[in-house]
Length: 224
View 1: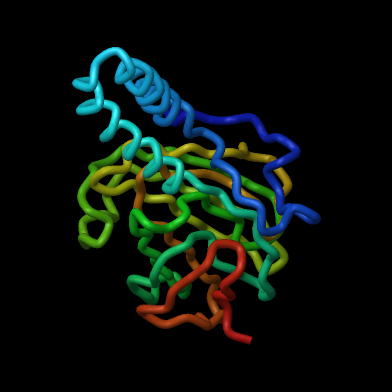
View 2: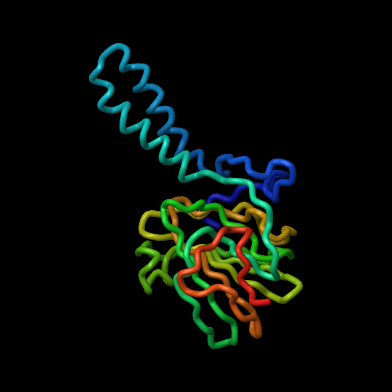
């Protein structure tokens, strides 16, 4: 895969005693490190010349914004056969020709962008598909840069698609094919991005509607 792949670490699953703690998402260093370093250097240089404040102030603001954007809070897992892999708003719910139902979740810049496993099971494939970078709310975003996941679960094959948007240019998978996952476990990050689709197996009705706000690892997607 051409995407940055990170080895699985013991911290990739759901936390027990550390719930409520917020940390930074894995895979953000190439973006955050140089920005934070530049902010620190220009802040020091303002002591020599106030003119450096013209650079230090926006760099400090950008660093703060990135710290917020790349936050990765611990969460207690929700209940259900399928739970939301992403924070955001349900953009569309579409019946698929093969009997499945696609639930598309749009993530705004204010949402957490770490994605989580919708069900427990085994990762059977992680496929990077090259494509464009149109806004995720555009119908043509189905052809965007994306990573397609398949999970072998107790209710069958679950497909999840991470889709990059107009700003997102990198999807960072945390796991590889063959990995065992628990429901709600962190599986990847979309830097500055944009949409996650989940395909509910045939016979499973969605518990959400268009406009429902979802919380990754918490919101139930399947109807009881």
